Image (tube, rainbow, N blue to C red):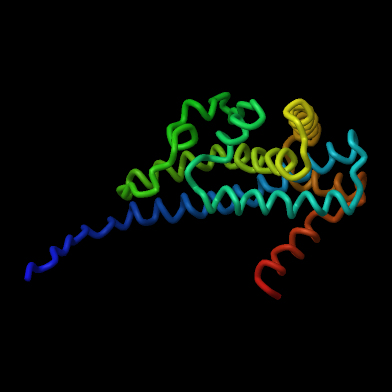
Length: 201
């Protein structure tokens, strides 16, 4: 009987472990910020230009979460690539870089690949630049798949939402206040309710 070979991995240096922890924390913080920015700008656009009221706006939050879970469960193709394939919308980040120039966003994801700690760190640091685009793609895919929106209308929403972000200087606090004042919609309250439901509270 052959003995199973045990491969011992070298421990991760403390400085690298700290850098990875900081990168993961940055993604969490940035994710929360961008969720407010993207959702509030989309909510304001839907209210201003399509007349969506509280019930439909609340539905958007759950549709967005459904798509996030659906695509996350598959994990073979990025949300941004799916949006391009289904709606012909090519998203770029704030640096003007297309997702097509980023390997892990453009190609099929090799979930079996074992990344080194350095590769993992670089990937997570790069992902921070694409959080806004990932959430945007999720919202637009939700409207396309669940509400039957065509590519033309999705692009119109993209343009309106972008203008609204610039109107409020990408300030999540101002956007949340505008949603409450204009659309009479408690975005932060709805988000907390959804989080409670997910935790089973």
